[in-house]
Image (cartoon, rainbow, N blue to C red; front, side, top):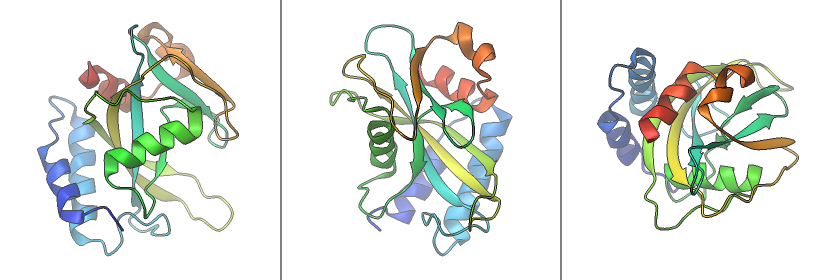
Length: 181
């Protein structure tokens, strides 16, 4: 695995959730996972779950954020997913997922930063039991407004805050986006 566990621990410990109690609790749970789990980045570790990475992609010029409609969970979410063995960093995992799922091009001059941590349950499927994703939410800026649908994201959209209720955006995602600005 290219991701260094100690660097991940330091990243989680440096995260400041402000007054967001859910993010604070998620950070503590993720820190515990990183400290005491043998394979915290393995998508095959279901107890106590594994680290995933998500991208909060800001529009290049407007106050909009990239969302995708998740095909399996049937919800509007930020693009993201599992850490892969060849990911150079946790933020690189989030960037890769955003590109794979929406074909968004990220601005190279924008330095990504951790804006959220959210531990949430994933329903069982095929051979996978119910498990937890310890999701690290990274902020990026898009190089352009061009996005595309994919098999994983049959709908993609640039969304402003006024549509969050309509799309059922979770509070943890809303708080991460607020910290990204």
